[in-house]
Length: 305
Image (cartoon, rainbow, N blue to C red):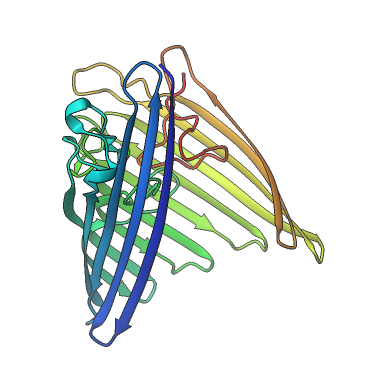
């Protein structure tokens, strides 16, 4: 079966901050049309919104809460009874939905930051992947430390996630993998060498895979008007045992190289990724859209044998 999906959106956002806290909002009008070769074409138009409030800092603490919603526009959406509704913006029954996308406690003192609750996360293999109506959010506990010069260390535990790409119903928080106990992650990023940034991450996704990921970015400016960026990445996936005792099948390696040239307002880039695995095994995007240089909104090397 082959298919083509097209998505368009218009986004409006605003932020209001004062001594009583910060209120931020986002409104997105989205349209998706998917042409299917072997079954009915589907389409949906919806209005998405995020309304978030964050308290002022008190004793190094603050609270944040954000309501996420997607409202179907019936007049420009296919009928769910004829299987013409596209569910990329809707819940499992092709209906509108709303849920608490963010609700966290944040502690920030000196070089230490701790955040616990529903929140946005952006790391190479756990990220928001905002390619549809709303970003992916996570139920997690994260600790960040910046006490070492030009170095950031991050440790985290992720229990559940919600959003597009998580499963059948994008309006519900679900486990990272079936019967999973969650995800443990550890990462370090260093920028102590001029024009060079390197980072390494370890993720243990219970009942799915253990992943080691590293990348490096080097910037050089041979001419005043010309800048070059060289990038390299590597990932190693090791399959875990699923709840039924079988192996998950997520296993393999990823290699990537990319070069960007910036000349004034013009940027030209070339990128290459290769995934290797045994028969009937594959790598994936982690939780989110993945970090691969050749990734597009609708297609990555994830889940390819």
